[in-house]
Image 1 (tube, one colour):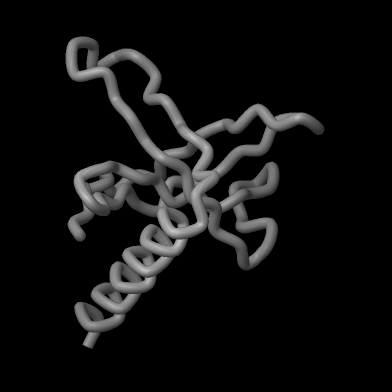
Image 2 (cartoon, rainbow, N blue to C red):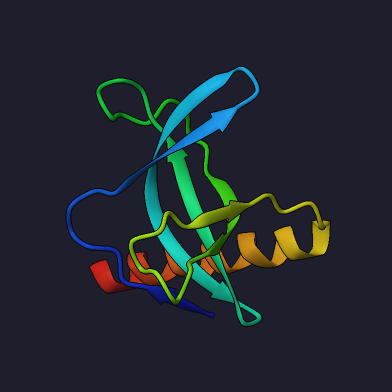
Length: 100
């Protein structure tokens, strides 16, 4: 597992859902089994977390055009989703370790 560095300023993503759009803060991008995944936290209008909730999606950038919007891919496989959540737990553990 590895994580990609996110710039210090908070990055956000707007997800278009069936019942409207949701602004999400980007927590981190994780690499699991050679694929990239993004961890997002939904926020309100002021940028504060809406709930104690994290959403995970596959993450794919176009290597030929770094200015193109990345593609977010819904994870519909339970084993894949579990691997991503385990990697995210390890990421959180590493943050706690770094704070010691």
